Image (cartoon, rainbow, N blue to C red; front, side, top):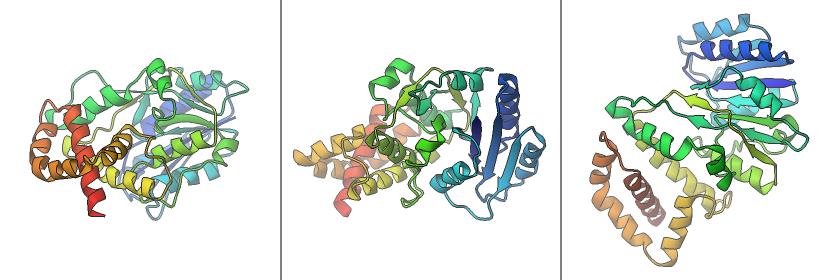
Length: 297
């Protein structure tokens, strides 16, 4: 019936596995939980090994790091059952009927089901504000909001997918391990016309990067996004930032944005690393950086 799949890296996922086991047993379904650490060799894996003592649960450790796309594909290859529930390591279900809600949402038309994400209401430390603000404003959307841009609002940190569908649309292992593998996966699902359903069954995202880490990863992901466009793997119209980027080139504004990156980079960072980061500044800084690296290439 259900294979619950959790990739991890240097993270204690034993509490998550315990909760998922409890919920799956309560739902009275045939299930397995498979967790793989992607070559972190972390001391935390001593705790994660306890997963092997749980009902129908398996914890494995890769001998080398293979990256976010390959680890998810590997988990799917090891799965026994017809439905795959992917969860990131740093999430926790909001509700005690999380597993059964996903199962009960399956219909004859179902192919992919996404339950959504939440962030805790309590403000984090000042140095973690940017990730929290971005998450609450851009990711923690209700079903109505997500359905307006169904595939663009799909995140891979918690989703249910039919194994036969995943066998035809997998995570692309050829792209660099620099983020946006989920953007490409969603785009490929859209191109393949796979049926995506949004429901209200969220998880809390617990693993907040510091503002500095999140900003660095966000700019690195811009490099990945530009590569996906250059290689023709996604349309420039698929995301808002790449759509604005394309329009800026038509109206010859890209040179101005590239100049702004060099001129205002420090001021952008000062705002984004503050206690009150602006998402407008965040978007502008990424657009300017995108134009800058495009001009360099």
